[in-house]
Image (tube, rainbow, N blue to C red; front, side):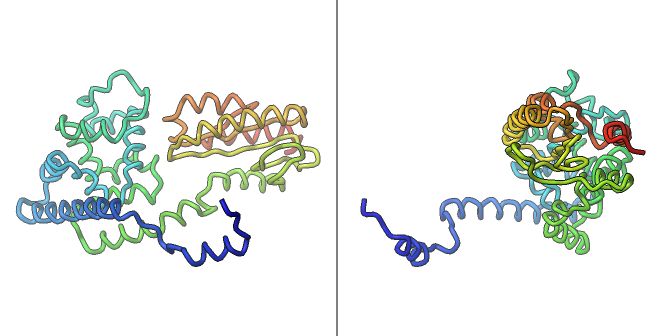
Length: 318
């Protein structure tokens, strides 16, 4: 192989740049899927116009079409992963009123929560269990008015479970488009980050914790109290709604960090705020994760109060 100079490699990237990568075979398959969703939604709209706005129309739509459920999620702007989490939430909270709404007694799910159901299982249940399908449609029709769901889901999400979205009204279609557009910035906003709750507590006690690097620690820390010179409490925050294989790596990293902290800062507490339904459904990773910390908290109000108490004791304040 003839070695190229830096300038030659630089020129090659400029001259042979494809600008926007696209796999033509994948693009054709993806366009076929998009067309299918479009056609299903047009078919659903036509059925509503001819047969009336009835739950039965929607139940048959998701049971009789391979992508029927996906098309309905597209219409209201509710992601597939959000649906998986919502079904997990229903199974975990086991709320009597919510169970009635979704026909829970027909789900054949009497053993309690063990793991999250896959998309494949949910689609299979929709096709083979009419009561389950009816329960999902009830969520779309009445989810935004149910007190348990309203308390659990962020306003941004439960507003998608809006009866009017299923009516193909112009205003609701615009709302769906807008929510799709701003979802990234909504999720990334610092005001929507649970760390903001901790910052409010710190302000209450006039604390200004350091953030970032600690000497001889191989990763950045979320909060170091009272400062990085004499740390007494080191805090890491992991609030997870979506799941990924990286959660296992995260747990392994925290265990390694705990060893470094114990070695270099033996007087400091390593505290974890570990919360979110994402951790609930990855319980093997969760067990490894929490083993790294001296104590663990969630963002439940009682837990925040417990953290305040610990903060006062460790820093001798208030």
